[in-house]
Length: 238
Image (cartoon, rainbow, N blue to C red):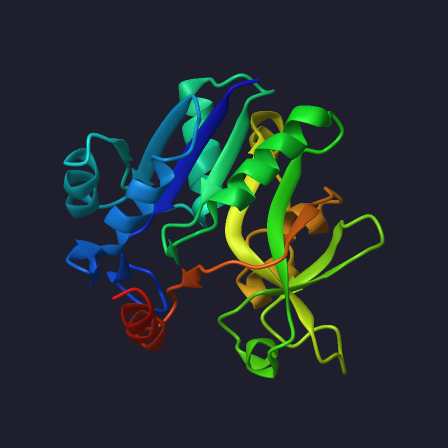
């Protein structure tokens, strides 16, 4: 099993267009993500983008970048198509790092890699962290999840879930999947739960594919979804 880091990087994000080109401490957001990702031990690292501007920035860091103008439905779809083109082995592990997850936790990546090294039954996993901040619960830009007793995801939502709770599990922008399940993803039926929430991971659940949630105790990352997120990140990491 080879471990491959893939970073989908779309230029025109619907909520914050061109956010990956915004600068923090004299580096663009996509540069910060790439530099941090380059610290991870893996068999390959690549950015997948629809932008020649992003491609130029990434390649200036001596990191490979694949450019495609195909209109993919989401980052997982972009990754799945790329894996098909590269004919990766079905048992290879793909780690998808969202290009807007500033200062994503490296220990979480190692934890997810270790998990896949000892289990053969799981095809999809992601990272979650518990929050007791009521503002997080109400923030529609922070994805919440409810998990079962085996740490499998029941549902992902932008709404406060579970109802009446004062704490929640927040989902971080890190996924891991075997290539084999990605080859099925593009053929999976797209349900209303994916469209209504605008959350690609709900397609796995809608098609009865479990997602293992791997909890971490804390992290220092910031998901840049809005201009206000960027403003807060600049203060935090100046």
